[in-house]
Image (cartoon, rainbow, N blue to C red):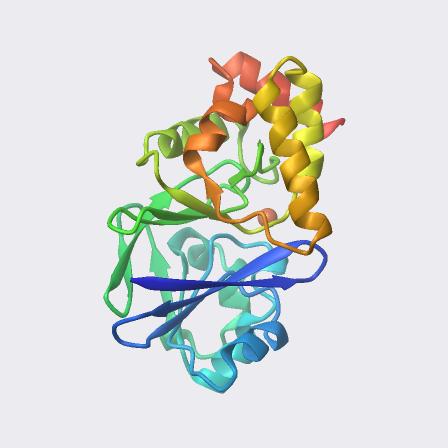
Length: 247
Ligand SMILES: [Fe+2]
């Protein structure tokens, strides 16, 4: 069973420190900074670093963590082939491990399975534990929103989110940014009649004002309040994504 500690970093990034409660092994997901992670670790060692995609705000901390802990680093295999992302921060390439769809990574006794979710970036991956019903979605799925398109493709993003929709409804989602309020404002503009959205917005405001994290999200809640998961087809999805880009 993983104990998941939430670390806030940079302007709105979430980093996750994952500790196997049986073995004490430690993984760190998308370390945008090392300092904040070390503070949370309080002397514990890191065994693996996991990365969802190439963007620097998900990688900056990797170099320092690797130098200090000599830990293994897992990232999308395609990012290694393209020589982008996490691999830029790892000098000793023997520590680098590329992942493709359905590969697995263990943190102690917890097995995380890779789901390829292109869209925000072409090579983006997410990590899922079916047993523990947890998903690390990186910049693919956010509270009431989804990632924007960088070097990915809108059709890919639509398909990727559709994959995530079919995970277990009880799944808790750990996304890599805190974008809830802005996303909920957009969602309310699109679905002003949806009472559950208003309640969610008020709840998010309260949590964030009190410096509480919005993660984990509940996939079940996303399924009926996230406009991008509610989009019934690609054309509506594409239009929504464009409107949100200009919101
Ligand atoms: Fe990103």
